[in-house]
Length: 459
Image (cartoon, rainbow, N blue to C red):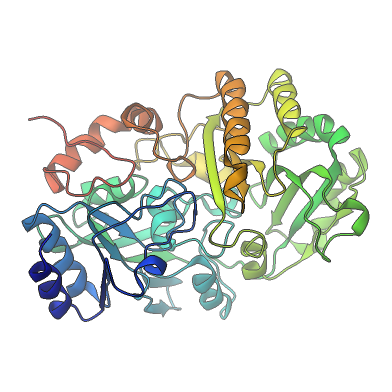
């Protein structure tokens, strides 16, 4: 790539362009997962939509590989690329609230914790994820599982409109009336169809839920997981809880006698009447008294950023994921086998409910296909030390391989790494063909291919 091209793009941008050889380059190319080590030619920190258009046109006209990054959280490092151009949206953080209609407009560079802080000022929330440093854009385009999934659905179920820079450089809106096919595809289809530069969401009256984690000894995990499975199938929408196997970190937040102990946990979020929270949680407390019970009234931003301190940017990460229609006793035994051998302090396994409000959206109504799944699971090998990569990758793969026979056949795209074309087809299942046709319409030459890539349909 010529110096002329770099200089020319740098002059045209309102934001900042960092290229190989610049002092800030090594810092600028980092993403959340330190296992990803890619070297783009240029990273464009776009200040506005015009900058994004300029970058898209530059990439298309010069046959440059193009990656899109907002929060940089993607486990597979799909917000960065080798030898290409990265559009970084982290400078684009404008927001506007329409409080009379409970709607918020946000640009694509905003993080979940920033969104939460704004909506919390008026006692509202947008259904989002569980780690505050996640980018709103990537989370939403992949679906958006989180604490409010059972009550208000996925993030995409609360998306009203998106503004998109297409492969030809044009800027369009996508909603139920304008470009409805594109709007359908964006709700779960990831970054395949353009650069989404802003989102318009519905807000909901969630401010101070009753939530937080309960922990039990690993010896109690089978009975807790059996109860959790049965409870969630008929639980009211206003209670959500994700299950986890984890190692208790040695920090002051936890009693010293539990430090570095392998345990199971449920992280709760109850948005119903706080006066009734006691009777809601009594069944599991009576089944087996938690070793640590940290459930209480909590600001929604605090709940949604509870794990941020444990999971800073720069850790080594390897993820494997699946959907499950149920969790049998045989599957629970597989979980217990691998939970007993958690390879590092930060390695974990999570099960997120998909039922409730999210399940009442028809699977053909958005690109996100697995509406009939019960749980979305992810096995997470995590550690700061690259020397432990082989150990934790081996553990995660073995865990996933042993459990995969109980799965629904696909996985949540935000929990998968770069698994290849067949895995992408599995993840979209019956919706893949329609997505491929929409891809042909909006990005026929597959400019946007550094993602969980949906190939354009053949004419």
